[in-house]
Amino acid sequence: MSATIPQQFTGYAAMDEAHGKKYEVESWSYTPQKWHEDLIDIKIDVSGVCGSCLHTMSNGWPRPTEYPAICGHEIIGTVVRAGSNTKHAVGDRVGVGAQAGSCLECDYCKQGLEQHCRKMQGTYQGIWEDGSVAQGGYADFTRVKGQLAVKIPENLENEPTAPLMCAGVTVYSPLKRFQAGPGKKVGVVGIGGLGHLALQIAKAMGAETYALSHSSSKIDDAEKLGVKRENFIVAKDAEATVKQWSNTFDIILITAPSENLPLDSLYFPLMRNMGAVILCALPETKLPPFFAHALVGKSLTLAGSLIGGTSELAELFDLAAKHDIKAWVETRPMSQATQTLQDMDAGKARYRYVLSNTKKD
Ligand SMILES: NC(=O)c1ccc[n+]([C@@H]2O[C@H](COP(=O)([O-])OP(=O)(O)OC[C@H]3O[C@@H](n4cnc5c(N)ncnc54)[C@H](OP(=O)(O)O)[C@@H]3O)[C@@H](O)[C@H]2O)c1
Ligand SMILES: [Zn+2]
Ligand SMILES: [Zn+2]
Image (cartoon, rainbow, N blue to C red; front, side):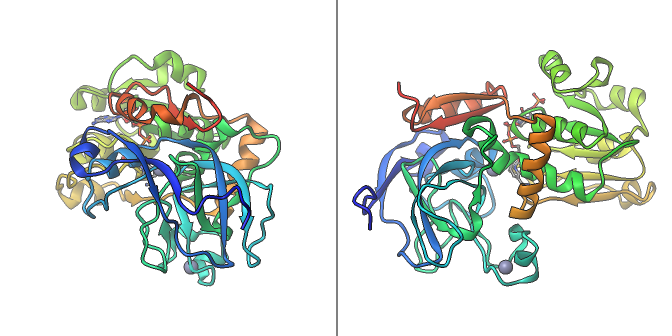
């Protein structure tokens, strides 16, 4: 093993639920999963801060969080050790998204849709073959399955590209599957990390884009993201919004993790017949019930969509290079992880925080 790779990796972890609920992290070292030749070690340069990191740290989701928990799954770094069963070499610049392992053999894996593999391993909170809990990107190094790491094209810079690894591919995947394109009207609910990339991606695909936000504060930014000013909708009052915009959208992509998502009172009425309401957000409460008529009456599809795989990432990189799709980022030193997570929770991100090991205090 190269002398530069430590036996233990060190990152910023929520040590228990009490601290996780306040998004407080502290430096913590752990022993990575046992080495084998399907793996690579990555020296991490940057890691984006995803909304899923907040849900995980605060133990907000149905599956309890295993503490200590190092989050971060929008990772870009350099390969420092490459197993012989991987396609990587020491020195490669690679990215890892929300999945760091899969079986590599099933139909989904063969198509580069590893997020659907039954053996998909979360980049953090996944359980490796040796029983250890996977730890994420707010750290100096990570050890992952080589096949799940993708080479970053030379023309794409670290900071604005890291959020494509989760946020970007998470919205690209359903926009492609539900055929966002010319003649289609796409409404994006929640203009955050996922949402601001969804607006850029849907526009690049040729669709007409609309932003549905809970206040008017992001209207100027939305315009820069390609949304006509008259297509910016402050969707606070469902009744008034439906009155103005009913039967408008072919696709609504929900990225806001709100409690009591107004599906039958707002989003379904806004849809054209046969349209698709797609949930990317993962709220911490159950969805409210609704009568089947609200969905059936317009032959709507209500869909969920889970991240994206390596083949979709490759397509997204091409689209990003062609249409100059970039995450809007604020880069901060990794040591400012606690403040950054708290700022993210307070809704201050415009539109993605990226934690960096190279940017110093
Ligand atoms: N499906 C997947 O595979 C997948 C992958 C990644 C993330 N996610 C989930 O997607 C969601 C968004 O992640 P993100 O990283 O984009 O988060 P984010 O940057 O915080 O953006 C969420 C946006 O939603 C709106 N919002 C936030 N909280 C809200 C609330 N309580 N009520 C109403 N609106 C709210 C805000 O936009 P406005 O100011 O415009 O209203 C906010 O900017 C999270 O639940 C995350 O876990 C899912
Ligand atoms: Zn994510
Ligand atoms: Zn598989």
